[in-house]
Length: 361
Ligand code: MRU
Image 1 (cartoon, helix red, strand yellow):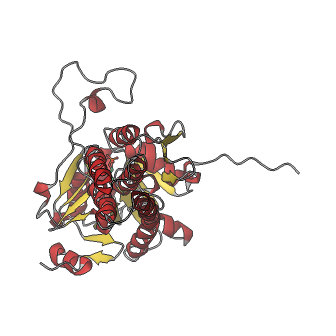
Image 2 (tube, protein in one colour):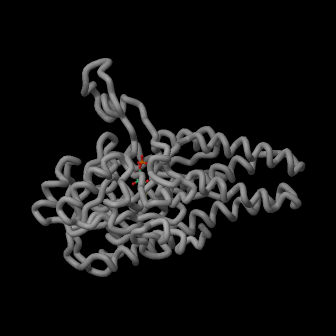
């Protein structure tokens, strides 16, 4: 019997994973999407650094998973039986990976979690520490799936079947291991017949909304409509959007949230038209060491991303001044609620986070 050959979709591949047999980090090269699905198998720390830097793997949770795998693979290659020598080389590798991108706190969170494994087992052999690091990297990967699913469950409580939902950038499966954060209610809603109408902003300059979010939601069979970044007011004014769900790269203690550039514009528009804006945030993205969003380091990227990237020809005059901050901070008073895997935080956020994370002020 001849089996009908079904084309593989982007959702059939894991965004980011650790290939233990080949000692490699395996990622979908997101700079090639939507044109080509290319899997990269990376073993060298420099290649992993570059993959994060060049957005081959991107989105805060996926960056954390990649960094954990990367530091494990680097630690595996440290050939010494002296634990102190091992620790010092581990710290150098950690420092190096930490320079790949500045805004998503999940990068530092994952690296700190890995270092903690080393620090608390310094009396053990190097081989034992290496095996514990492997387990921790796998745990960080696996936990991400459950964290996103829980965010999706909480988020689903806030909407109803048939709603119009808007999202910005890609906080989807391509930014995590599975489900995404902002897209988790969309995937769970689809399984439960919610029939959402989803709008995704194209997200200039690197078009994560058009290239990634539209691709994955379309592949999942959802009703997704791509709009330009300057159209969010138009769809909200027409009453086509009942809720906005966005991801985030770092949340300060007061609830100010850094996410892809343009998120704060969407938040202002949502407020104007009375549409609730929900930030979907794994608790690993909450940075209680920062009082407000003003302290969040905002990455600035190459001007060429605006003047020529993704196009054959230049799109702007030579040597024109360019400003290209990669993220912006949405003020906490524009955010209706922050949805984590531990529940829904509502203002005042500091108190809600302290309760959720059980930190003593
Ligand atoms: O520059 P990127 O593509 O890494 O930016 C990603 C975002 O802004 C996402 O919305 C954010 O990381 C949350 S991903 C769940």
